[in-house]
Length: 275
Image (cartoon, rainbow, N blue to C red):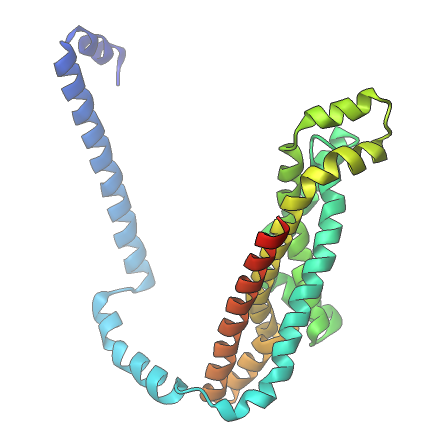
């Protein structure tokens, strides 16, 4: 809006100014909707998306799901117990190792506990790189270095855990009550004593909550990592797809869903008890 228009609006009665502002907001909303609609149409054309194409493939989708894919082949359950346990092992080890390393890095990355501002910036930059590279990419890189197996999945999840948890833990540390910390410093307490007596008691509830939440995420992510060679149920799913054993794949996916639900239930109960 130009200065002339603003001056003219100020000279209008209050009701007229309100009406004019409402019209301007409506025009702005209409312009935003028009831009969103244009981008949507353009994207649909570029991707070849259309309702007719969606409808034409619906029959094949239903045929695959209800004939080739379902019902699951429960006779393969014993065969998939090992991969299911591997998924749990990978997720748990990655959570524990990632949480411990992230806690150390978080104390260096938080403004309230970092011994030096440059160290804080460096640690945050490092963790940002770890966090912004997708887990799948880390899995592919580790497969090249270490070959197929559960070690690959564990390492990939540890790296992404460091990126995510360090940031979360650092934010928890920056929100603590600094009054307790300053009181300890005033008594002449050392840096380690301040951390142990003034920071850790406030930090631990958030640390436990985020660590358990990351365990839930790891169970889901381990399936994707497994499909590129990281072991667990994801690897079993990928192998079944290549061999067209779709009913076995269906059972593996069902087991992943059950593992996720059980993990969420257990972690929620632990949070209620501990936090």
